[in-house]
Figure 1: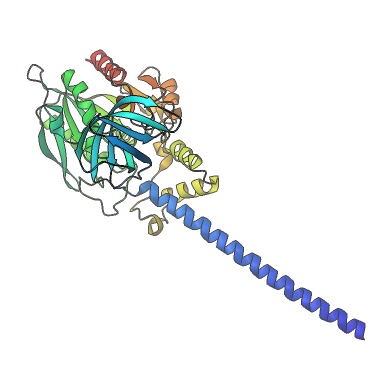
Figure 2: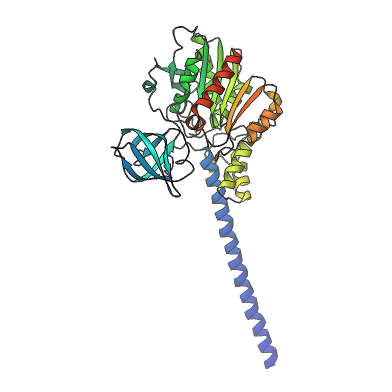
Length: 397
């Protein structure tokens, strides 16, 4: 009996241990599931939530205003040839950087063209492709106007064509994710020299135009309405031929516009710089760059596209990401198109741009870059960028 009793007690202890182990394992599984769900929700919200301040990933090591030089930690951005803007002091200061003067294993020395404002010294900074901050810097006549959209008045800049031009050819520029109208200022001289009136538009939730009710990006699926309004504005003010130009996410906005607008009679062509041609391809690429598990990326995309996920994402309506794959929808496009994209783009891969160019070689002209990163093609090689755009425009004219 003693042996039996002892055995019975042992089985009871083992059962309790198994129960405790199962509870612990279950708790761990619940924690893991909750963590994964939180990560999915966070990624989804990050994609669609407008950003007002970008991270400062560069580091200023020294400034010599007398020599007109700046020393930065070497990174792909800081070591790239060309001219750029530099935000510093938690975005409280701005300077213009010129060409590379010296490169070592860990540092680069660049020309310091001008400090626009702020006290520039050692510390964190951010290199920007904007270069110009104010339209007046271009030395061209410019007007600040408002465009009537379904959400209210959206501000825009209009650079009238030179007096010797007819003024009936317009380009409407569309900025990208987390950007503003300033993004397109560097392109204005090229279009202006070709005889175009340049309209730099704003769109919902970009910090200039009115906000939508959900205050979320539609990744092109809602913003196109504001560019449709810009097309109507151009037509009402003398445009007879309109080119749409999109930067990064602005490319997705333009592609939505040319496949959804009913006001395309005057639209004669499209120029895309570092564009999002396929959102699924882009988001999978970004998730891979961040080393996120595939399940997290796929889960985030499902959230964005789901009818039930509004309380989680904040979206007023789901986004149909599959309808934003313009490689698959290549047959829906008909307008002449110029695409400029860099092979080393670390934000939007050039794979979809190349695939679209291959699928629609009848209408797409593709100009590749290799060392220009994302939306910095003009900065890296202004001559190549400008000549490619000008040649394409002249062919269309």
